Image 1 (cartoon, rainbow, N blue to C red):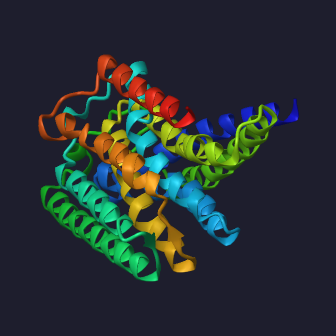
Image 2 (cartoon, one colour):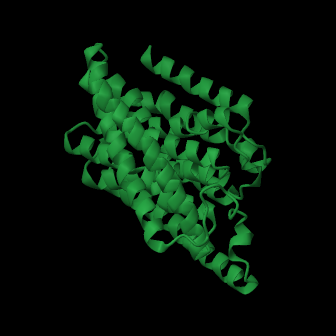
Image 3 (spheres, rainbow, N blue to C red):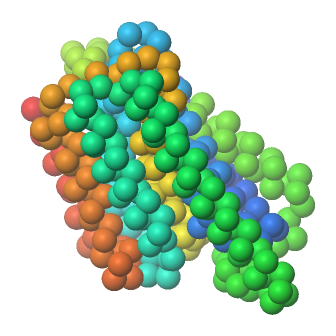
Length: 322
């Protein structure tokens, strides 16, 4: 019973940490004059991707590079189909107001770059440098946009009104800096801790039922490391903060492709299994393209879309398990 209890504890920690991280990120954006979307593309996205980074680096060091690649590809698919699908079933994600076209195009570009490098047969030191260079450009562009935004807001003397998030549940323009820092630290520490507890004990449970390590890596580990994004997105959706929800997914996927595999490739070679080139990479790209209606045509992600996205993910998991 202990693995079940620890897995449940991990899930509770994930939910609480996700709530804390959203509160900290939203209020940070209010205090410093940075749009919530940009905060979600940096602090929130990087924090919720920490489990993938830890697991991928550890997998390469232990001589299991396939697990690192499967973790990232599977997590990116889960991020879109499950992490946006499940919250949309609970509460409509009003993504029609999100201004994330450029960041979405960056994510698609990162996906194509990643797939192109995969067709070389392996991710090596050179591949890692290319991916990290692309990440550096994305971060520089986000910083430049944030700087421009602060200048505009300072000139207008309407910092909080411009983002329209001062009425969001949990947003407090006067929240003390120490309290914002506490929320961010609790979220950034709690998310990987909760994910580690859940994945490790869920793996023990899976092995008890005779599931192979390879299947665990492609499904359970990828699903488990996406749970921080799910926890954060559920809380963001319930707080009517769609910018954080959609921005978190886009940012996390870019970070997974560019930073996690980029850093891991500097540590050791990651051979690409031919099965990834035939199926999994294209499923990941197809899931990314499903965001086009919400980004380009300003549609909200309603319950019907949520059910459709979640169903597609369940079908994908079923195919992998067969």
